[in-house]
Image 1: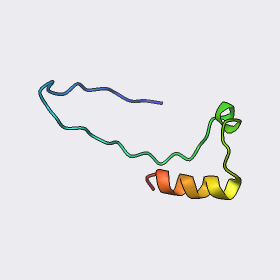
Image 2 (image 1 turned 135 degrees about the horizontal axis):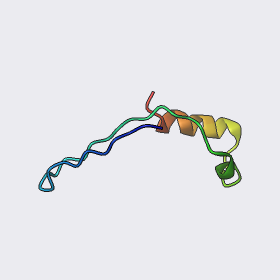
Image 3 (image 1 turned 120 degrees about the vertical axis):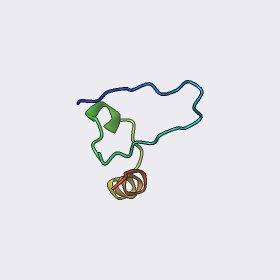
Image 4 (image 1 turned 60 degrees about the horizontal axis):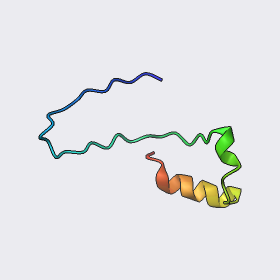
Length: 50
């Protein structure tokens, strides 16, 4: 992964949202998910910027 953090003006009230398109769920997280596959797909559709 490659990224760079560029600090802005500390007086700025602007928040920037950087969209993401990843639907990958790390293996350790799978055990914590209580949704079935269909429910998870719908949730990922709603949460992922595609």
